[in-house]
Amino acid sequence: MLRTRTAVMIAIAVGVAVTLLLALDVVDPVELPARDMVLRRLPQHAAQRTVVVAIDEQSLRVIGAWPWDRAKLATIVDRAADAGARGVILDILLAEPRNGDEKLAASAKRLPVLAVAVVDEQGRWLMPRPPLSDSVTAAHGNFELDHDGILRRLSSTKQSGDRSLTALSVEAASLITGAPIPVGRSIAPAFRTRPSAIPAISAADLLRNPAKNLRGKLVFVGPTALALGDRVLTPTTRGHQPDPGVTVHAAATESIIRGDVITELPPIVAGVFATIGIAAILIARRRRIAASIVIAAIVAGGIALLANGTAIPFITLIASAAIAAGVLETRIIIAALRSSEERYIDHRERDAESKRVLAHELKTPLASMRSLTQLMNGFDLSDAERKRVTSLLQHEAGKLETMVGTLLDLERLPLRDFASSSTIIDLGDLASARVDFLRASTDRTLFVSADRDVFIRADAALLERVVDNLVGNALKYTTGAVTVRVVRRGNDAILEVEDRGPGISETEREKIFARFVRGTTAAGTNGLGLGLSLISEIAKWHGGAASLDSAQGGSRFRITLPVAAESAKAGAM
Image 1 (cartoon, one colour):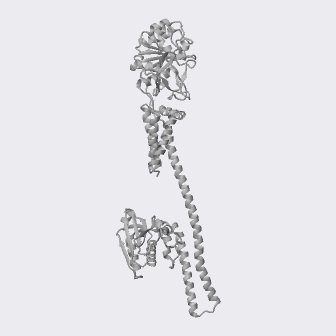
Image 2 (image 1 turned 180 degrees about the horizontal axis):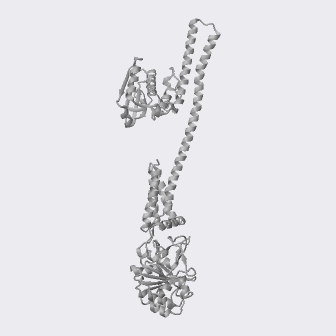
Image 3 (image 1 turned 120 degrees about the horizontal axis):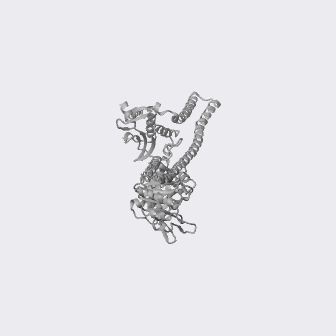
């Protein structure tokens, strides 16, 4: 596991990077479309306060080509006033004087009327002229399009020259809410009421028959015919078919009235969230699970926050968590590959050394046997001499047989199936029985201290061999008493054999369990250097380990094995 300090430093670095990316709008090309996708899938709201009087194809056929006489617009305003509308919003540029302006100005005095204004290429406002300017309120209708041509925000006010105008949607919403106009703010409507969902009445129908469903509503008047007006994409537009500008203004007004406006999480706050999430992943023991939890929290929390008007950088936070997890997995894989390579090299070196030592160890008895056979064939030996040579031959052959047998045991042991070769045994009973057996063949003092009910799953014959080997070594290389202990420590069963001999140096302890290694205290005694290696392999096969400690006045060999499961122990009792 990464050290906590290192994990925190990495997490802070990622948090700083996330903050900078968001502050510089580098990730907008991926963040904004992701947010749009979520917005399109959130529950939509029905229009409550707005209606569009559409200058559509039907109206153009019935009334005539655009532009119309302003008297027609005056009639539409009168119809809205008669129906009890809260206000009329004209998404129609009234910058040039036309017939019927006086009548429209008179009608506009019956209720609040807003008229759109825009900035021309010279930076001048194109606004209603007298007499209209005295009876209507000008509001800017500029759309702030993002790099991908989608309208996600609008300026609450827009300054050009010495004049500042309020956004058409903001001014319209204030007719309902009475809220003060925010100055110089960027407002991002959620468009939970889609532009296409705004109720629409054909201007031709309204002019023909008075409308009854306009009471208390904001009546937006503007072109929807394909040949007229501007068309805009919003985050919730379906099928990438642009909506008429007048319906977009109405939909934005619905969002502002409801307070359904998106506020982006400040970059530094997003950076802090990224730092916390990455730190949680790096510090956790199960990083994959932690990464999954963090990513799920980002998705679920992000959707919930967006539904309540707060936008978080989905993609950036998810990507930072995924990249952190990916980097960690890559690091783990690289470390595992390096470890495997090191183990392979070590195994190859040990294998080469074992072959070299094996060749040397085999050469010695074979050379002795060859010399003895030459002695028998080349000289006329007496019966006594022949018997002695034969006995030596048998000894060397037995030594060779033991070596080959032990080596075969070492090679075959890892291939045995543990589950089918093992049973539940009491380690204390096994050790006590072997010590009783060994006492019969020596006059040395053997002590045994064994806890009861130390159950393990094991091959009894192999563990008997371990006890015999360890006790045999202690009797061979030391002269004092030998103690055998069996204890349970937590989930471990411990078998210890302690002697009072000269001990084994610390440098020799590191390699004492390797093949063909014999300590300096074994000099002058018979042995192959394979016994402790076999003990170590037996312990590993049982899921345990062999170790060596220095004891007061001697050595303590320890075999640590896992205790059997409770159900297995209960079955053995």
